[in-house]
Image (cartoon, rainbow, N blue to C red; front, side, top):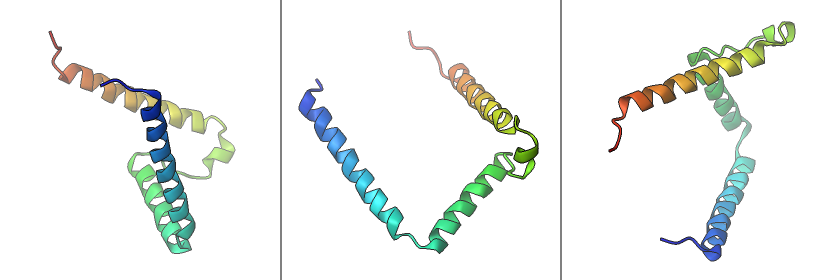
Length: 89
């Protein structure tokens, strides 16, 4: 299948429409719904071992260390995928 300019424009327009709908839905959320989403994100961070605390104020390198931890986890998972997938011949 060959992709032409019209297809690309149609694709972008569809995703722009999706973004507009999502923005409208976010505006309609109640404070309770936003609070629940924030709590879900915080619980996910704790589950991933990224405990949020006030130590960010005392240790300016903490965000960098967290980023490195996430990057190492990502690279390890990516390496596992390479090893587990058989090579195509």
